[in-house]
Image (cartoon, rainbow, N blue to C red):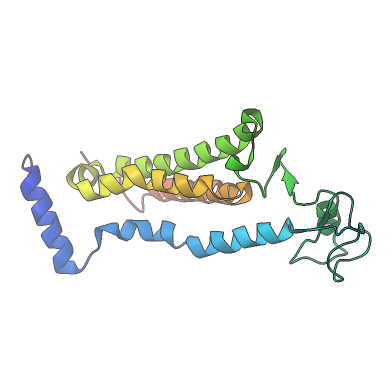
Length: 203
C-alpha cells in the first residue's frame, strides 16, 4: 500500500484488531512508573516533614526527639533512623532536602522569584527533552512505521507535554528520577540497536 496512506492505516488497524494489539501499548512502560514515583514523592515529602512550635516554644508533639528545633519550625524526618547522618543533616535544614544546589523537596511553582525557579524549570525542560529524544531515537530506527501510524505519532508528540503538567506539580527529586530513568532507557536502546539485536529498518 505504498503511496496510499489511507488504505495503509486501515489495514494497519485491521492487523491490530486481528492480533489483539493495542496501539497505546507503547505507553505502558511510562505509565507503569506511576506507582514508583508516587511512592518516591511520598518518601521525599516524609524526609522533609516538619512540625510547628507551640506558643511555649516547644514542639507540638511529644514524639519529637529532643534538640531538633532550630527555627520556627521543627524538623521531624520520617523513614530513617535518628542516628543517621542524613537525619542530622535534614534536622539542620527543616523542610528542605538540599542537594545539587537546590531543594529536592521543592516544586517549581513554590518559588516567588524567577531566579530561584530557574533550576527547577531547567530540570523540567531536561525531562521533557529526553522524552522527545527517546521517541525520536525509536522513530529513526523504524521511520516507515512512524510515518504510517498517525495514532503513534500523536501519542509521541503529546505524551511528553502531558507529563510536563506532572513534572510541574512534583518535587524536584522526582524530576531527577525521571531524568535518570530516561537516560537509562536511551542508553539501553542505543546499546540494543548497536548490538544488532534490532536492525535498523531500511527506508
